[in-house]
Image 1: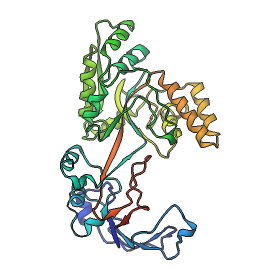
Image 2 (image 1 turned 30 degrees about the vertical axis):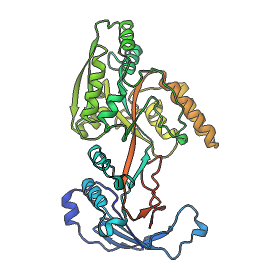
Image 3 (image 1 turned 90 degrees about the vertical axis):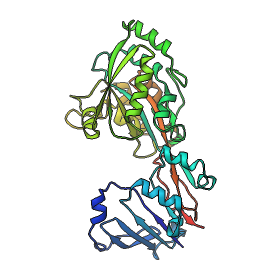
Image 4 (image 1 turned 180 degrees about the vertical axis):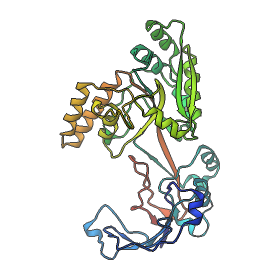
Length: 379
């Protein structure tokens, strides 16, 4: 049996076309089911074969179903999905580890019953949100932040992100997976389409009975996370609550530099965060632990929150060895921080992956959204 896959890696077309051949350097250690037998273009084309020194008897978590795995990188996502869709020749036994289907591709697949059967669904511990910087007026006023929370139309935001097949509404900062400590809550219930009446009421209490004008910073990159479409959906929702939003679109690198700078951070921007491992710690600590505020480099604590009670609770949870108990505490802390309205969770992404017609055992991780290649087999 043979299986082929194309993990998606950043690579320019020139690099993909003009990569130089490199033989395997040294003697790489293979402790798993496969070993490297060919490496061309310094990782652009890698062939793996069974590792005769590995035994499933001592490693129950992984398997060695295909005889060989042929890995290609540097291919455009549209090319990958087209080849998987056609499924001719060796492509019939191909998978992609992390190339998503977009809205247009999903619409096309929706009309093909056979292709619909070959779409795997997964989630990533990831949240897209509106980030407030309370150091910038008027975001130091919690009623203004609460008003914006009530005004958000999550249905329009999800539509802008690609639709309900690719995004799920978020009212919690933690993603909806047990390992993160997910605890359902909705502190500023806006329903599916927003609650502009409640937002106007809070604005009046905050001293803005005639509304106010804000600037929303976002990336101009065409991605589902911080795209102009998502920013426009936020703009339209807030307008119904009497909030005029001016959009400040920045090239992606400029956007990252500005939003992660203590000195230059805007008062309102679209943020996003993903976990490094399946726990509430890598989600809440970098964003809300005051000791992780970085003044002279990339800062991720957008609210510059330095609450001793929050910091202490993070330390206490990190001492726990009972993962279930820790998860419950992370969920409770998420809700406690959420009461301060320092961010507005918008949505959690859903990943759709197409795979070859001769492939089975498709498992997509529910915390990193990547296909588990150790489970894949060929029919």
